[in-house]
Image 1 (cartoon, rainbow, N blue to C red):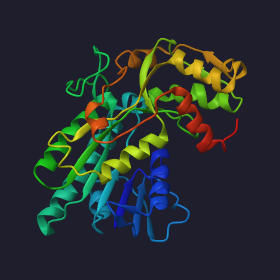
Image 2 (image 1 turned 90 degrees about the vertical axis):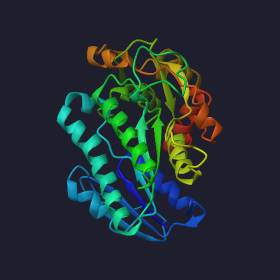
Image 3 (image 1 turned 45 degrees about the horizontal axis):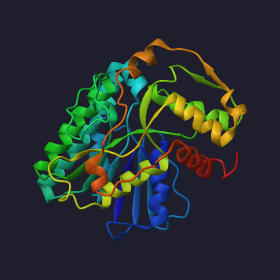
Length: 327
């Protein structure tokens, strides 16, 4: 089996490649080859015995998608995206990467299908940003897409394309609406939601962090470990059980910023909490006002998708996976 990971240099892409290497198989078949693609060269996962191809490639260039599927990968994980804050600040770049790049990929697969019947599994990472205020709590699976950001709009359009291309039989697609991933390892990025990770990640290693919103902000979270689990399950699941509505809101944990901070206090103590500095940011507060507080995720749970049940658990996952199990 040949796996293509687009966005392989990012945090979730790296962890996905490591998990695929550890598992050694997907859909009950041995993984013999992996193509890892991103705008910068990704690192090959340590310990993988099969063929690894590293592609430094920009999916928003029309010919790139055709090149990536020339070897006919069996499963395609599409993770590449411009994050929410950057997509809001740079309108053209957001649409070029998040929408045009995705459509180029889908079109390249369709044209290949017309030539030789090629029909891969496509696992697309969407976002809970496809919905926007006013929102019920919890948000039911049948709630309509009402994005209030450019990023959410781009993801919502891609969800529609995925459903239509799947309906036509050009590929077998599933859209995974990821919760905000927390705690993200590494350095802060331009995602508007980045502070959810920053206010935990930095204090856990004795560094200050900025909180740009109030402690009453409520949001939907899952760990990087759960995110990779969603993608793997999305690749393995029998899509006949999913039905024609191919985009699923994933399980997660609903928590306020204040509840996050209390979990940090329980796990790491008052000294860590004191490293959080309150600095209100009007743009981020405006974006946050339209964010989803939490989902029922009934369909996804019934299909076997799972996530953490407490923020203490999310913090301990980060400590185990990124800090060697110790503070």
